[in-house]
Length: 110
Image 1 (cartoon, rainbow, N blue to C red):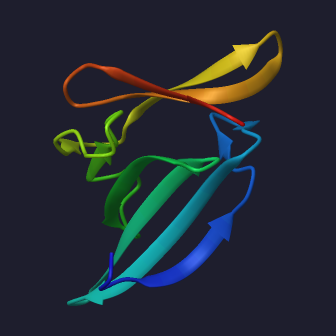
Image 2 (image 1 turned 90 degrees about the vertical axis):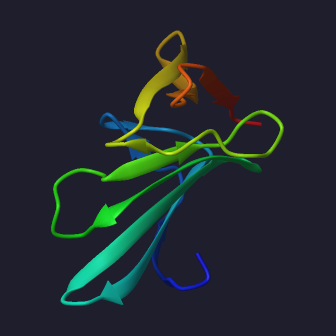
């Protein structure tokens, strides 16, 4: 991440068209040859959930990695992460992200 420059940040970012209270999405970029590489970091409250990266001229993520419960990282996987909204009735209260190991990492807003 130290080789990337901050590009933009979103508080209460949306997933699947639904605003997720407390979800912070931060985006970083760097020039790479004739392309722009991009990394998105997603955190819910103080918990970092996952990174997704690729190039800005591509429609979807090239790879992603999900934080494990101990603070390390599950192995990176190809494509965009599988993410599900956690709801309390109609209200979105968190996210669940599937790691490359098949485990679901869940986070709820504080």
